[in-house]
Every structure is written in C-alpha cells, then in structure tokens.
Length: 291
Ligand code: PDD
Image (cartoon, rainbow, N blue to C red):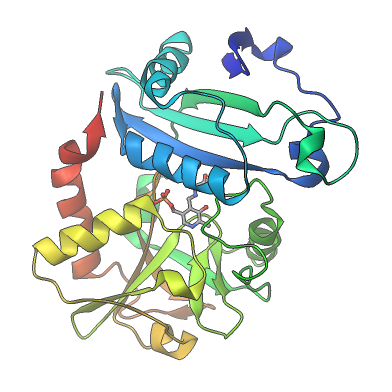
C-alpha cells in the first residue's frame, strides 16, 4: 500500500512518523474521510473546504496547495489500485501539527505532517440497510463547543471513541450522543435525522455537531422534493416517539435506525421517507461527483 507522507509516496513499511509528532503526543491535528464512486470523488471540494476550515480553526497551515489536491488524491487512488470501475476508494487525509519538542506551543512544530491513505471502501453490509441498525444513548456527552467545537474535524477523537466503547459494550451498532443540554447531537461518526408526522428533523449545528457533508446534501435534496425540513434542538423523548430515524455519513450514505435503547423506533422497520431519501440520494449522486 502506498501512502503519501509529507512530500512523497512511500510504501506502508516506510510510512513512519516521529514519536515527537504532536498529532500523536497531543491529538493536535485535523482530518477528513472522503470516498469515491468509481474514479469520481464525492463532494471533493467540500471535503477539502472543511479540511481547511478545521485547520484554520486550530491555526494550522495546510501544506498542500489547493490546486494540487485533485492530482494528489488521484495518484493516491491509482497507486493502490482503488478509485476505478471495480473498486470505490476510501480516502483519509490527516494533517497534524508536525514534529517538535514536547510542549504545547504550536511554534515548536515548524512543519505540519500530511498523510493521505487510500484503500478499498467497504460499505456496510446490505442486511443493515434492510433491517436498520440499533443505537444506544451514550452516557458520554458530545463535546461542548465552547471547549472543543465538534465542527473542527479533529484527530482528538476520544470523545467519540468513549461513546463507541459504550456501544461496543452494549453490542449496539453505535451510540447516540446528547449535548451539554441533553439535546440530541449526533452519533460517533454520523449525523442524525428523524421523521415525525412527515416532517424531517435534524439537530441544528448550534447543538454542537459536525457540519456533515452528507447531512447538507440530504437537507437540500429534501427541500428540492418539498419535504418539510426542520433543524432545531430536540429531546430524546422526541426521537423515541418519532416515526422513522436514520444516520448519514460519507461511507454509509443513509442508514435506517430501527431501535433506540433496545426499544423499537416507529414500526421497528426502515421507514418509507428514509427509503425514499436514500433512493433520491442515489439518483442524484452523479451531481455531487468530481473527477
Ligand atoms: N465521519 N459526525 C461525525 C462526528 C463524524 O465523524 C462524521 C464523519 C459525520 C458525517 O459527516 P460526513 O457526512 O461529512 O461524512 C458526522 C467520518 C465518516 C469519519 O470520521 O471517518
């Protein structure tokens, strides 16, 4: 496997970073997970934009020029024989503060570390889309935006990992995290939607969530279809009493949720609006691909 590390492609045996990298020492870095459909990258520029926004928020310079990213991502796919007609690509970009002496001052690290990894994308198994997945509500709360804003896609991922550990212990698909006010926030790697009386609802960005790129697309496609859409602050009770629920992210697209905290949600089967929105997403996907 070829990995782009700082300024060149190296094979995985040589893809080493220093123990002084502040990404390792302090979780001081940002990342993006991107995917391709065939050789086309889904919402490439939006992901690169979010990477830049995350980097800006922590005062980190992106060491790759904007115009150089498309060719770099294409080479990263081609070298590993992914992102072609046979195999969709999973692409992970990581930027860290870089190598420097121990200490919090970012000035200790003159050069950011940049890593681009690609591999075959493994989508969730079909049975999860057919039956829906189950969530538990984590005891771990989503990060308070005034402390570490979830809109920064940070490599400090312990908040999400602690919630994931709770899901694993409960043998659930994933954890739903509430925010500091006990409002619904998001899951460990996805955004949350639910449907009540035909209205599509999702926690607003002000609830302290990642501005998910799939979330944005679902919101705009739903509006195009004249589906009533609301972004707001919602309680767990509102979710439990909802008719349908689903999750969105880059690799899952639209994943139905059919159970929360062991109780069935709605009919206990993937809902009609969930299925319709996934279908609309798939039909419109070509609009969001970039070569
Ligand atoms: N996760 N919320 C969180 C906390 C996430 O980490 C992600 C993405 C999302 C969905 O964002 P998008 O639609 O842009 O993929 C929401 C990716 C898949 C990851 O961490 O690997």
